[in-house]
Image 1 (cartoon, rainbow, N blue to C red):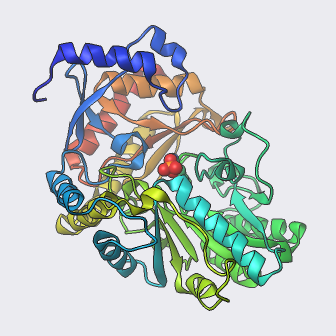
Image 2: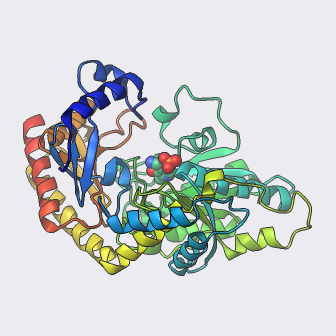
Image 3: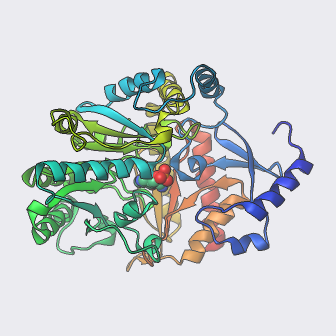
Length: 460
Ligand code: PMP
């Protein structure tokens, strides 16, 4: 680590302790331990205030820094853009905004328009609003309900929490926005239908969506919002048969399909977008984290041409158009960073590396499962993997949260950062999360799983 001035940093630690709201964190623990300040990053590694090196197995904690740290080419592109033209509201256009939209849409056959915003939550809200407006204009306001799935997460605002399938995240923040209706999750390892398995299970889990539509009244349901692969809810891959059936249901009931690619998007699964593994045709795709790998705040709500058409040939009155703006959607740093981020993924063939390293990570985790009975299930696609921990493999009793956390803490002590699934419902916070940057090497992957091996040995 260069230029680390420890004296300056003790001031920083004091300032952090006195003034920072750390995210998702009970602050009591900071009364007895120092906050960890991340000072520098390069490639797959970050350094804290003590100069300690950490191998980052979670791309900045939350699946974000897809191309790794210290990318001067992104910083240069952003700087050049900012000195030329930093901001104008997206009521007008910008050079990097138009260029990135063109490149992005070229990777998303069937999609056509990009709405720029700042966060995943915000992008999802834009899609919810479009669904409501389409309902208002085309269905007299009746088709206003939006289905969301148990265990999925779409963001932190009240509407997004209303569409949130992780109950403990929602507790105490109600009342919620009406019109969001939950459908069951599709994780076969946590079976909800005992008489089926494999593709039959996938179809059964999707049938459950149809049951909710019939219960609610098909003419009241406007959209289905899903994560292609559920992230914080425990790395849930849809079982075979699921998406085909979902596609049938969406067509049968004339639903708009909104896919939240905030985590899956921009290479994380080894394809540009997670849904591209499954041959699905969405109406809305939202993305954020990996779009600019955290070098600038940017999110995109991308719509199909079909959706755009619904807003195009409308009377020229104040109800006709999408009456929405995101002030900082006009910051040019976001698309400038996103353009370079995408160029790096292409230049360095990172989708292929992600797929290959993902295979290695899955292989290593399966190998660990042979030696550690506490690993009940291993799931993943590309560099988006999870290992669910159980105290009993036969009845699949979830491992205690304190022990799952102890594994994460042990890895941290070893200088390796991994994650654990969000507290969603009691018993559902027991999945270790792995999402290294797409630049990971075989040595990095092995170092991550070796540290987990040691941690599991000590904690269980
Ligand atoms: N959707 C998914 C699937 C997410 O994982 C997240 C964030 N973890 C969001 C949406 C919300 O994104 P943001 O925090 O940028 O608002």
